[in-house]
Image 1: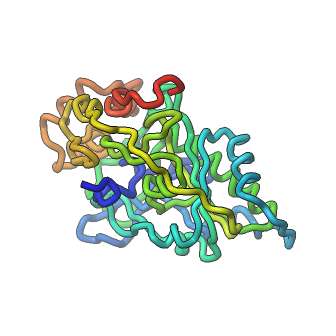
Image 2: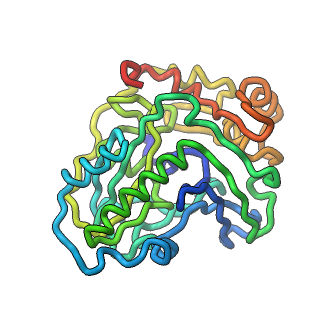
Length: 308
């Protein structure tokens, strides 16, 4: 199966959180009413306009892809690529198994011309720590309009840095906003950062799967990068064999057999009992209200081990 045709091909992770304004918050939508409340998890340009002011105060200068990439690296991103409007328009939209909703880039930023896709290297397991709102029971178990706070370290780090990059572009006179509803894995492949591996996450030459993705939409018309080419997986199936719940097939994931989904939806009845049992036994919990997500399929990957 072509990994780009997978139902979860556009979804960066199963984590539905937003790091806007340096906090991780969850927002729910009226869509999919029959399933009750569900995450959208992201602000759009309409939300940030009131917080960040008008772009540039009339000043606008040319900016190159090289300058943007240098600035993104100064801010701590290990990988940076650019895709243009035609590529943005080719990205899929819609519901992802009730967990996330993908939207068109122009819905988030009507003046968008480019997207800067970034990868942050997570060099330590603590980046994968989560806290859950104690009132949260699970996906599909709450009424529309309810809201909950979640905190996830790597999402907060990537979110803070993408807001900084967007702010820098706005200072130059361009509209810019962190992307909330883009299929980041697909975007990363188009921007040349890496490929979707058999474990369904993006694998990079430099860091293997030990990266977390973000993107900034901007009205700056930047030179696009070539899509990633090559196969980093080959015949390797270590990630598939490493999954204790057998949630993985090559380029496919049965999301409701993933232990992270089970922990993020603690009272949902769509998680098998053996998955709940393994999650309780195998997942590290620093406190009663937090956990470190399972990364066994990432840890098993040999790509990028020298730097990851």
